[in-house]
Length: 206
Image 1 (cartoon, helix red, strand yellow):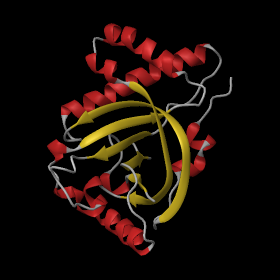
Image 2 (cartoon, helix red, strand yellow):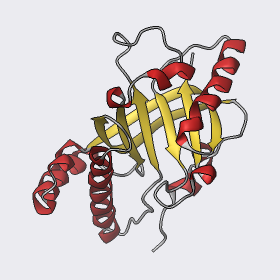
Image 3 (cartoon, one colour):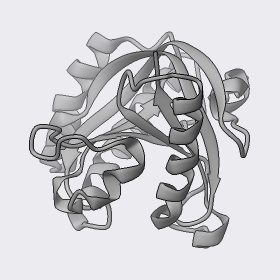
Image 4 (cartoon, one colour):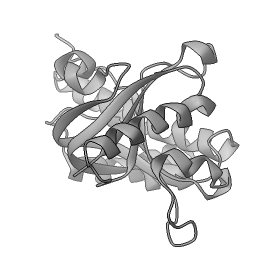
C-alpha cells in the first residue's frame, strides 16, 4: 500500500525561503483544535495531545480502507483581541501577554477525508480515551490566498525579528494584513535544539 506524504505531495506549501516572498494558497483541509494561553503551558500540551490522538485514530481508519497517509506537520493560527490591544502590527505582537494569545492548532488532511466522519468519530474517541478536549477537535477549512512568508531558523522567541523583516517587506510592497498569523512547525520542538528549529511564518495579505 502506497502511503500519501502530504509534505511531498504539497511541497510548495511546506517550503519557504530565508527572505520574504509572496505565495498564493488555495483551500486546505485540516484537523484542528482552538485554545487560548501560553504555548509552554500544560493546557497547550494537552491540546496537542488531543489533536494527535484524533489524527492517528483517523489515519488508522483510512488505512484500514486502503488509503494510508503520513500525519502532517503541526501548524498554528495565532491571534489576540485587537480591541483590547489596538494598533499593533505583526512585529509588535510580542507585547501581548502570553495568557492572552489565542490559537487554532492544525494538522493538514488529505482531500478525501470526510468532515462529517471526523465529527462522528471524535465523540466515541473522547469517551474511549477519557480526554474531554477531543470533543473540541474539528474539521476545518482555510483559503489563505495571497500571503507573505519567510523561513525562521532558531528559537521561537526570536520570531519578532523575522516578523519585523516581513513587515518591512509588506510596507514596501503596499500590502496589508488579510488574515491570521500562520506558523508551520517543520521541526519537532520537543526533540530539536532551539537554535535549529525551522518554522515557516506566513501572513495573508491584500
